[in-house]
Length: 171
Image 1 (cartoon, helix red, strand yellow):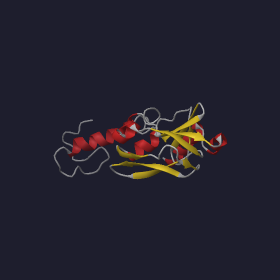
Image 2 (cartoon, helix red, strand yellow; image 1 turned 30 degrees about the vertical axis):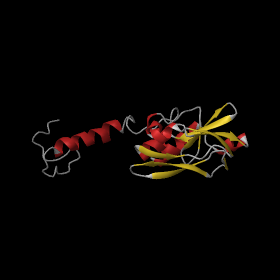
Image 3 (tube, one colour; image 1 turned 180 degrees about the vertical axis):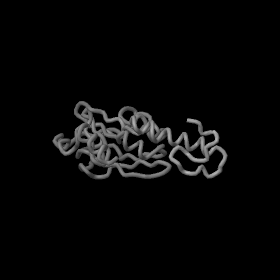
Image 4 (cartoon, helix red, strand yellow; image 1 turned 60 degrees about the vertical axis):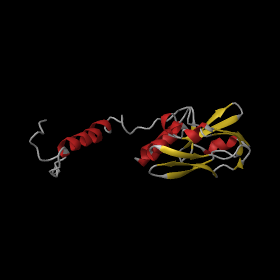
């Protein structure tokens, strides 16, 4: 692969005569063809111990509470988060209703409840460090804890295999 004198990128498009354009196009080609094909760049992590909503929220049963956050896929699609909105402790929110929002430099998105219940805790650390969701969406990036009114609401969510199938279908 000798592209020193090449006037086209690896896909055969003209390099447009810009300095460094060939090298940049090679780098882009490498990421698109090598990393994506082996899924090291775009494969989102799906925690098999969690339940998921079609809108990319996750739920973890923890004692008599449900811990809720957004999936790795959601944070990856959003990019670097700059703001997180969470409800107040004591708020009673129904399954499927909006409970908060996340905002990045490129988008904002509402976040929805997987179960009906009362908010028992919020991750106040996200106020100062919303990037915790990007770094660890299933750990330090949790958003709320809920005392569920009816644990059976989780039956309306997806298990990890069904969520992974949804992600695969979206690609």
